Amino acid sequence: MDEVMVDIELQTGDDQNHDYQQQQQTTARRKQEPIIFGKADHHVTLKFEDVAYKIRLGGGGVLIKNQVEEKTILKGVSGVVRPGEMLAMLGPSGSGKTTLLNALGGRLGTGQFTGKITFNDQKFTNSMKRNIGFVTQEEAFYPHLTVTETLVFSALLRLSNRLKKEEKMAHVDAVIAQLHLKKCENTIIGDQFLKGVSGGERKRVGIGQEMLINPSILFLDEPTSGLDSTTAQRIVSTLWELANGGGRTIVMTIHQPSSRLFYLFHKVLLLSEGNLVYFGKGSDAMSYFSRIGYVPLIATNPADFLLDLANGILPDASEDHPRFVKHALVVAFKNNLAENLRAVVQVTENDFHNKSEEKKRFGRWSTTWWQQFTVLLRRGVKEKRHETFSGIQFAEVLGVALLSGLLWWQTDGSNVQDKVGLLFSIVSFWGFYPLYRSIFTFPQERAMLEKDRLSGMYKLSSYFMARTVGDMPMELVLPTIFVTIVYWMAGLKPTVPNFFGTLLATLLCVMVSSGLGLALGAMVMDQKSASTLGSILVLLFILAGGYYVQHVPRFISWIKYVSFIQYTYKLLLNSQFKSQDTYPCGSGKTCLVVDFPSVKVVGLENPAMSVVVLMTMVVGYRVIAYIALMRI
Image (cartoon, rainbow, N blue to C red; front, top):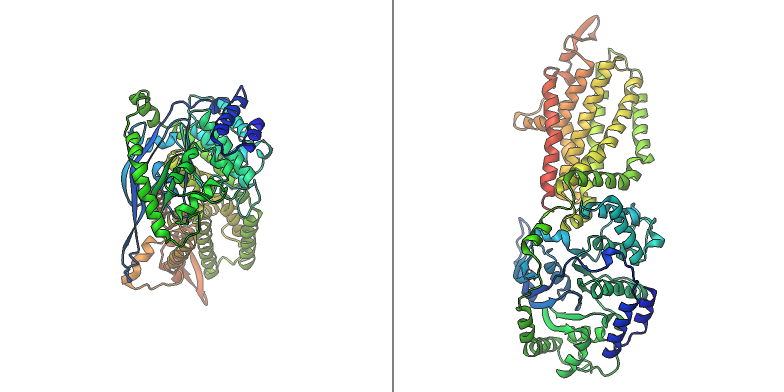
């Protein structure tokens, strides 16, 4: 690889010298390559014909309606990329490069799409995405996982069951070696708040994740963006090797490549405001524009020259309006290149293997549901271990527990008001606290979930169950510690059944609260909006819980029936009081606890129904969260 890099440094724009250096690069490659960096499993020819895409803008809200505008992003773009070729899509910002890349990779959002995209003359299907590599511009990673851990979990999820675990680890080692990640293999990925690998290393990790499956076609969105020229050169050189030596089809968008990078591209596509103004060999681009009358006055980077033209800027800096220049480029393309390109695109490919065999290969998942669940569970625990075992959370819960215990220290058994107040404070705290921990789960992981799901890495159900099970231990440990401290400090009934009745009621409350947080986070997917909505709902449930308001108007009394606070409060009351219990209510008089105002409104009868309702909420809120996640 070092010899390859030296050859690339000496490369010039001369076509003959370029071809010679490519031959030298291929010769200099290591004789014994890792298997995944050899030939691709099968070759794929990508064709796209008359691709157009429109979106609707405006519309406004419920009260204010704005005029709906239709914007055309792509305007009849065509092209073909064959095995062993690397296509670079160039154009100014907003020209439609990323939209075209997303269209080719089957990742377009809502909008009106027309045209034809085929892989070996077959239409794209959702099952194909598990065998196609796609590297986004801003790759999403778990910041606390190391480079090796990131690649290992991807290998365990994406590589076939036909491979043994040792073989999958060999693939990871091969990726690390080939992409020069050895020196940072044990470094965490990091993010904007956590120092980790460099930008270039981060890009290579993203490429490595896709290369693990040995894709026949690889899409990349600006893989050199934000990198220095040396790092960009290394990444593009590696991609050139994967295409030229492995027979892969590689398509990338790139903003402003250097001249050295430009001459590595087998083909170049140039867009201007969604219009195709050039498609052909990279080495022929300058001669084509010279033939139609656009010649640079001085030696210049071909990519800079093409981008100037796409922006409507002429080499002689004349005063021609950019709109006229762009129109002239589109007309020139239609007159000189469009017909030949259309003929090439419409040629039927005959190198596809067995269509039924290929369909079967694309159609199956790489791993079983249980394997996905166990790997995702391990990955989630590793990523969340810094939160799960956070000293801050222990300190928060411990502090509230000790403060509550001191405030209600050894409460007199006859003081029903204080005991009821303690029980309601427990349900209020554990109605809020778990919700705020879980409400951010899916909004924070949305980017990772979208990335993995678009790659067809695992089923949504396996992810959801792994996420739920992984969070469960800490959700139950903290309230158990809290109840254990408060219960004995406050002097509640010192019997085992009463203690466990209080504990189990609190744990049910925690599971319902966390489920509600998951559901709100999954439905809203915005942290601020979800937390605001969660605060309002829980506050409403607390007010309707039977402690603060004893006489709720009939027209709004239905709220108490959906309040998990009320059902938990009822179970906590049952854990400390029986219907025949009494308390001193005056000079020499006793009253039934069941008639105490804060107890009477809720009652002590039929606690089993409260358990059933809370268990239904535990499951129901999580089902809602799962259904909401199906949108991704």
